Image 1: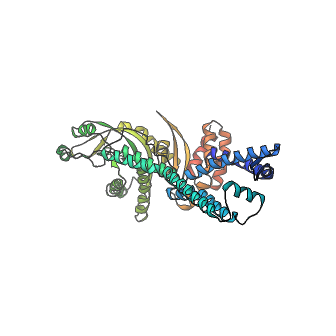
Image 2: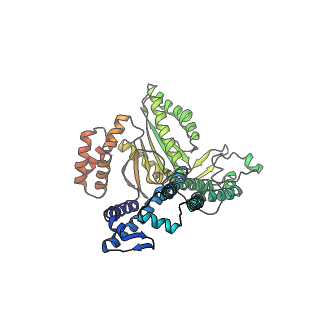
Image 3: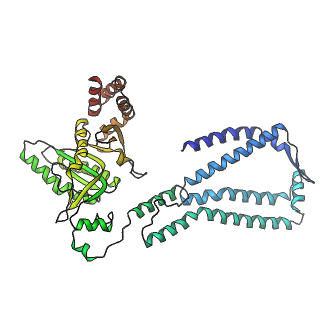
Length: 449
């Protein structure tokens, strides 16, 4: 719930409760007789009227915010529900009015010109029905207006890419998600090229939707271009003294990990030898591949005699690349030095999978992920780093989740220079989680100054 919604909810409670208490004063200030409407407000009556008006305004604001949080099918129901209830109450009151003989009822009969034959009651009922139908038409018109805008956007997308970066759809939460999806479709839009020159050159299919015609031509001519995306770096480690262990790592990389990247729309950089480097164009694809990579190695090593470990890092990157004669993607290894620094940090903290805030900030809003903040890395640039908890066994994951809040506060204390406070917190964490290497490293840094 948004902060502003909470404020309106509090204001509604503060106005509606005293309005209910003072409502008898308001009711006694308004009356009906044969001459029409009679108003005789006291001080309490005016206060009650003001509170009722404010409560109604806050209720309407909250009601519209409630509608914006619903899907279209629920919006159609709840947007017409109040009018349906009012319509039903009005018809019931109109039907029972002829049998009432109170002064107020007689005044209403005179006002509406309702006689004993009941003919005018039927006319009023017809009028109410027509009014109800008109109100439903207006409600449906405004509720479904975003669908009309989506239709216009889709027609424009059918003719080519839209220059607008933002597409205003309107409506509630569901239409916001549809609008976000249309923006992503527009950003990834690429006219299919039918020129035979593209077919003769081995350009990876994954590159064609994200590159312009000019960039594709440069790749065909062997020129270097800048590719902006997300890179997954994986460092396999084991017993280097065993030749079979090194062979198993190479076999696993070639037969399992590189083909696995294609399932998540990634391209392996062929010239990076000591680590596995895969380039993606969506943050969610990069993170999905990183998790799948950890699971694959865990399964493979479980059924083999050799012990293999992996450290995986995910970050955004602007990489200079070109294609060799076989169509393999070749990157500039000098640009990966900072990314390799993440591998060293993951080894130090014994974190299987870490990723940067650049990746986290570009994940879809509905992407489910359990993680914790593990610190800030400053080298050529400053970025926050996070550790994925999804790659650990259930017992360890639950233990790390339990201490997540304390761990992150301790890291922030450490970064702010309050090492004594951080040391105490890390020490308490280590009492419960002895195998939390990250807490152990931070604890030593605090103690050693």
